[in-house]
Length: 135
Image (cartoon, rainbow, N blue to C red):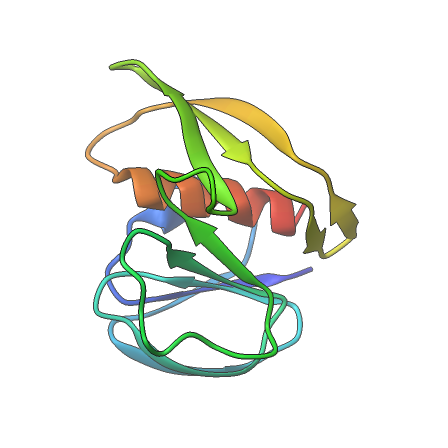
């Protein structure tokens, strides 16, 4: 079973259930082939190995990891995960291309999610990606 590592400021953990989760406020070094890393705000890290790294595609970082599957989340359909429709109560999230998961490959799909509390769209998209990656 994979592990979720959340680095920086993120509320995505509130939407991830049944998966071991580790949080680090600002810096972490990750060397775990079955880890999914969520890069929150103010995150700094050293990624040696991981199944995937999830980043905000609307706020690119100069310190993106190499040799690790990168999942970008944002409003543009060029991102790996994006929003395809929005109402005040619900978002429809889209996986825009095939990705390698813990159990194989997941093809593009869409899923409606309820907007709850004060959780950012990025955190909703990151949790959606984690649930696909570690299914």
